[in-house]
Length: 88
Image 1 (cartoon, one colour):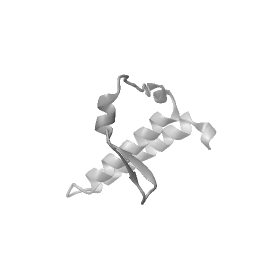
Image 2 (cartoon, one colour):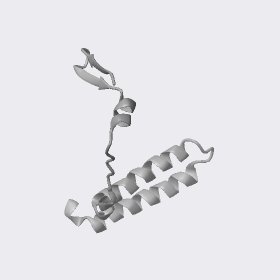
Image 3 (tube, rainbow, N blue to C red):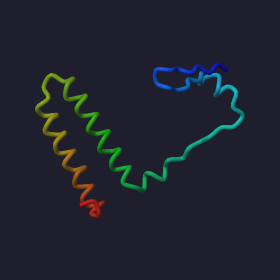
């Protein structure tokens, strides 16, 4: 394993592949608990936003898509307001 000290950022760089190969334990993270929190709604919102603007810029006639996108985003905001009134 090689460790390189870089002066520019005052950080230490480690070859991750070598580090992972030398590990004897495996760590698994179960983040499914987030599905019962506001994070699920935020992730849905973020995914929908990114998915639709990628589509928006890649279709020739995006006027219909724009209308659909606005309705879906409004629906997600309504979901925030209904599920998480405490955020207001």
